[in-house]
Amino acid sequence: MIDIDTLTLKNLRLERHEDGVWIVTLNRPAKRNALDVATVDEMILLFANAADWGARAIVLAAEGDHFCAGLDLVEHHRADRSPADFMRICLRWHEAFNKMEYGGVPIIAALKGAVVGGGLELASAAHIRVADASTYFALPEGQRGLFTGGGATIRVSDLVGKARMIDMILTGRVYQGDEAISVGLAQYLVEGSSFDVALDLARKAAANLPLTNFAICSAISHMQNMSALDAAYAESAVAGIVNTQPEARARLEAFANRTAARIRPNE
Ligand code: 1HE
Image (cartoon, rainbow, N blue to C red; front, side):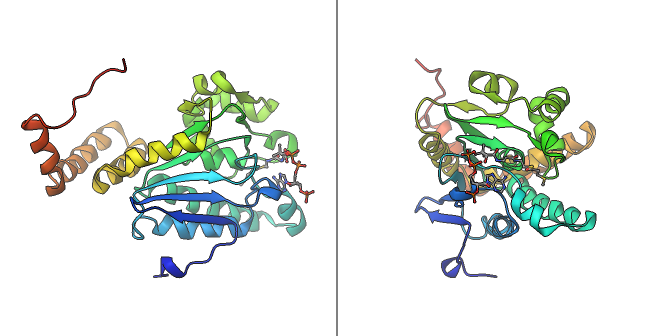
């Protein structure tokens, strides 16, 4: 396995904090963080190994004013790909995004500016999306003579529903602000920096037990792919393992002896 301490990245930047929080930053601002082959390869490497390398929660951030402009259209144009070539590109994207969604490490996307096309597919593979006032979402594929290939038909339609996704890609409809939240494109809309809020959420998530987070950020997605009957059975198996983990005993003890914090509504 590659040694994380000697890893060099070109299009992503990695910052590792003491508490296990990682900041992974899309780092091609001059190209609006468009996803070229090299970037997706780096994502696969990082997200496939994040848990083994000690990540307890990840903020997915972006350099520059835009989160991600989607597929690198210039690279795609110049490469003059065959159908099989592009199918393999899509499978690489799926690998990267599946490592994110199913990898067991919480990923919180700090959004800003354009979250479009493949950029929205990337954001929708994160577990939590935090938008700021500048953030806008769109699927411009329809107008570019393209179709989504990075999982939007599954993840974006899961977020907003099939009818809204079809409208977005057919007409280029742009969502932002409260409307984006109300249709489910992000869970948070913040007045200040989405990065600061995403970091705060990542720190909270990193304080959970890793096995618990593994279940939350893997099992729920797997169970959505199952029949209800199978999902309920799988849930009982996962809960059997997670809810009896020795590491949870101290937390349960603290609740039982009344030293653990109680849940209270916001004042
Ligand atoms: C790019 C890309 C890109 C910018 N591929 N190079 N995605 C799209 O259709 C979005 C296309 N991009 C845009 O609409 C705009 O660039 C933005 C709204 C994101 C930003 O606008 P702006 O005015 O800040 O930047 P710009 O002047 O358009 O672009 C700045 C540079 O970034 C410029 O490069 P330069 O070398 O001429 O300076 C652009 O070419 C470059 N750039 N976006 C390549 N996407 C698996 S299927 C997935 C399907 C899709 O994702 S379809 C793509 C949808």
